[in-house]
Image (tube, rainbow, N blue to C red; front, top):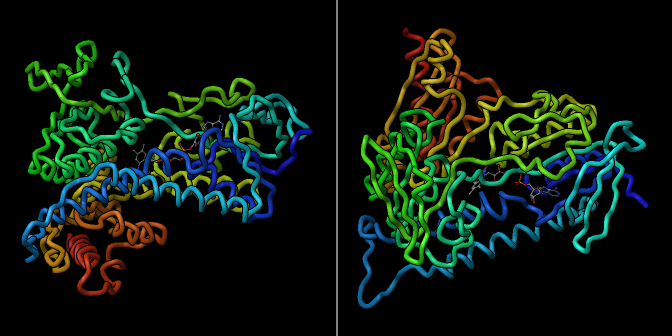
Length: 477
Ligand SMILES: Cc1cc2nc3c(=O)[nH]c(=O)nc-3n(C[C@H](O)[C@H](O)[C@H](O)COP(=O)(O)OP(=O)(O)OC[C@H]3O[C@@H](n4cnc5c(N)ncnc54)[C@H](O)[C@@H]3O)c2cc1C
């Protein structure tokens, strides 16, 4: 007998499990189909494992700087990196969160079906498509007949064609997370968020790191000041950064000794050799094998096309959310989209936040975070902008922490005084950005943020001061 339900969800990552919880809380019956483990990329191959490694690297960096804080090691104290213990801590945190997620599904009476889901032909609820067939691990098939379907099948690493990936020496970030030893040297292809986080983490662990980036600068989607600050910090720690570089994939060789590849950079032909190479050049949507051919759903460049306000696909009763629709491929974006889709399907106003106003975070050392327009994008869009930038070293708390790299930069509309963008580099930037996300939701202007009392001494004071300066500067234009 097929399972009749209000909502069937394909994929149990942050998009899928959030949609399941919200739909169940709204009184719907829900079946979530997951072919691997609940938690998706974020929990098993993304946010949580990578941040756990970054935290270990940060602790190591702090120990190395202990002398600056008046802390010395006397006698025969021995310390060093136990990579197996670093990995085991990561595994423990991931399984703890995985167990918590499974019990949350039970508490909310969400049925979890483990298997590969595929949208099939017509159902009693839709003359066109909508039955979801699930191939279970034992090869048997289960059918679901849902009123609504949410596709949340996520994404996987985009591969550079022509490279001889071997899963150990030449890998994507998925396999790098499973490395059983830390490489002595690595070439990272791609200087976006994932590449920069890995470069920061591995260099803190003592790995010799080279980044090869095709664009003119690291983090090409971020404000130029953010790129420059992160590049400066990594370079100072010995990371070699080759921007505007072209990788000759046909020259790439993998052997017992490691990986070698040739790169064209600044009119030179350079041969790079390292123990391992990681490719992080973006993500592609998981759109294959999910039955799109049985539907009116359209795709563009490997991503599902949706109505941006409601997240409905070409078929009104089928929604798509998260990485599989492209745009901002972040876990909190997927979770927000889940809420939007469920709100729409249950008759509430979806209220989707614009992609630009979703906070973007980079968990390198120093951290970086941003929301809204970059200075360049605002100018290119024809806006008259006023920017104010204050250095992190002006913050008493940053001095106390011993972490003074970075800045707060505010981009304001010179005519209306509106807040266009905020760019942070420095300690806890990824926490500090939340305040500006609230400001964007409330449509607050720099004056209001500058007027808000911030506790002293905190890093957040620097946001208040920069907002005050931005409010002054737009007032006096
Ligand atoms: C190294 C790395 C670090 C990251 N760090 C961060 C970070 O710090 N912060 C942040 O916000 N984002 C981060 N991300 C991005 C984040 O992981 C993704 O944006 C997020 O996981 C997307 O959620 P999703 O639900 O759309 O898809 P996913 O998390 O990819 O989940 C999709 C799920 O669908 C399942 N699935 C696919 N096809 C089927 C099918 N046919 N049937 C059944 N199940 C199926 C998959 O097994 C998977 O579990 C990182 C990503 C990577 C790779």
